Image (cartoon, rainbow, N blue to C red; front, side, top):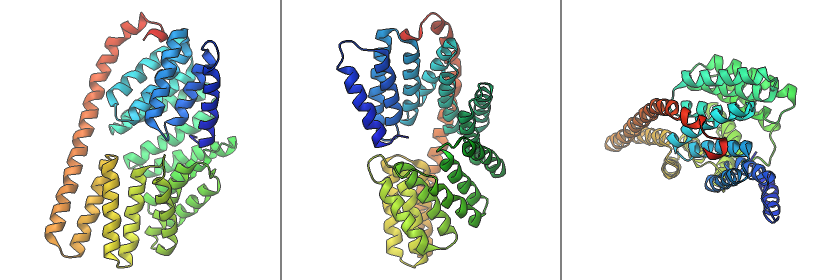
Length: 372
């Protein structure tokens, strides 16, 4: 799961394979595996490795390796904000994966397409793709992927505000992970905790959050940081501030480390600000929110930026500083407006890309996967 040991092992294997007299398909596969591990910690390096795999696969006329690298590239491009490139690559990868009759590659390409719909808040379209993926996984009796897609559907329903459906779907995924003894059980447990929090069931949510931590490999630092934030936020909701603060501090520390998630660090700081407000420590609350604002701006997370501006505006209202409240409320509205524009841009892009995919199909038909 992007662990340092897995990355080190794969990098060592790549170096060994590159030292041999001639490149091999095994080297392509290893580069593709390394790109998959790296994207969680170093997107630019992951991008370079995926391009290297694609170039070598083309040179070797290795079709499966070429399509796998295209799947990797589409996902990485989506993560770095190259939305249109990612979607077009994913459709191209899906087309060639279908020609290779490789259902796993088809599913991996569809994964990027479904995620792109979610990024554009086209939740009903995302739901259709996840359900298609669920059907494919079941048809191939791939229970692990079936569990994955149940949990992913839960996230779609959560985003839509359908919390009972999200809970039911994620619970089914959790049960399947448990039967398979799959380590992603921890993720499903944490997701259930987050859903229950949104349903207002804080005591039950805390129980699930604590259980998620007992199933989590300590080496998965990014997940630890996320899960601790979930637990800390639930404790804040319960006004258990003394218990919440150590969870939030540790989550913040881990998310500020290399490979951490700065937007989650900003979320942790917002929860810390709530704790400081409860203690009537206004300067510390302001400091936490200002740090959150800087982190959110650094990673261009508009959703977090909007929430931070709203929180700062409320602080100024509490202090009866109406001018300050108006200023930050205007900034909040500005971020929300920009989020709406970006959402419409993505939705418009998806419509254009649907037409482009249809134009490209005859071209792809004339090509092999290695010369796309």
